Amino acid sequence: MIRRCVSENKTLTATFTYDALKLADVVVVDVQCDYLKESLGNVRDGRADMEALEESLEIIGQHINPKALVLIETTVAPGTTEQVAYPIVKKMFRKRGIESDPLLAHSFERVMPGENYVSSIRDFWRVCSGVTEEATHRVVKFLNEVIHTQKFPLTVLNRPIESETAKIVENSFRATILAFLDEWSLFAERNGVDLIKVINAIKVRPTHSNLIFPGPGIGGYCLPKDGGLGVWAYRHIHGFEDNIFKITPLAIDINDTRSLHVAQLTRDALRNMSRPIASAEILVLGASYREDVGDTRYSGSELIVRRLTEMGAELRVHDPYVLHWWELEKQDQYPTVSHGLKRFFRGQEKLKSLRVEQDLERALQGTDAVIFAVRHKHYLNLDPAEVVESAGGPIAVIDCFGILDDEKIRRYFELGCEVKGLGRGHVKRIKDQVRQEREQQIMPPVQIQIAKYK
Image (cartoon, rainbow, N blue to C red):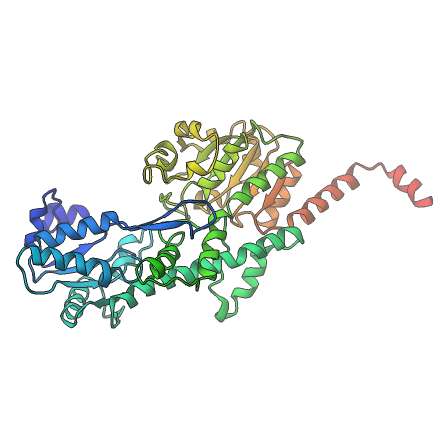
């Protein structure tokens, strides 16, 4: 697509000069607006990072044609378009002697990384709103021209704050569903329940089909931080002092720390094999935040790696979609200076030299534990016998995402491995069955007869 637009149709041009803004009829703003957390597991201790967005809006206001539409697609704190962006651009207009008011609108993207990335932008429902009636008319016209709105109609709201709030509520809702299952995941582990089977049993009911097993925390650019933008905006944009938010920040806090439990499961599995976690060779399968993509932003795997490193383990990582894990390799600068997860853990310097392995068989050699962290298609059908053979003997196996069915779990136990999983309390029952079967096979018949007559 890029080749077609650049080389053939010549409809896409990259530039380094702001003068290009003078030629635009529509300026689409997708400048990052992050939420910087100052502590792990307490989203209230943080702030919206608006500096880059505000600076970009100043530059836009200094250069655009007064009749150009400025469409903000960034996920922003509710109120940003009307109470932050609009005044900035209007001030720049007045400095230029322009008396007309700027045309600003908001329409958030619903983007899904992966092979259908472009389709998720073009072939999906959009919400939009303008600051003025003319801005609303312009944004509707623009989106009708670039998105398949006949099949996926636009939802036009009255004010940009409604569009902004829709994005925050949409993602907060999804984050809350995932956080809700965290406590039931622990319940399942401690009471012999397989939460994967429970969820699948419930999802046959249409009203509950959106239940999602959370895996080792949630990741990606949106869900871990969007609710924080709403909590922050309530006080710092709208000026309220009371504490109305209870569920939204709690869901983020739960999701932010869920991955730490994986380190505990790994420790316990190794203990059951009489192996210490310190100096253990541990392989994490999957660095990205979701299956079959190479996006590592806010990945649950990062917390797993960092906590196990803090506990003294030696980490390896395999991911067929990730060549460089910048959150580790450039951890002092990425994603931003002094705001990486490194600051919440000790002993992290050696992770700068960690490189993502592409050869799975080589990555498995000599490992003490394997953590199935992401549901990449490459991991779904791994044969337990081949995994153990590549590792060189029995290992601890941690299933974070319901990747292993009961047959594979049983096979790992038969091979002398230890298995644990998030929300998979039934593994102990399988382990006990394997042990009983083994004891029956090795018990001499005469002993059984003597025991009977006693």
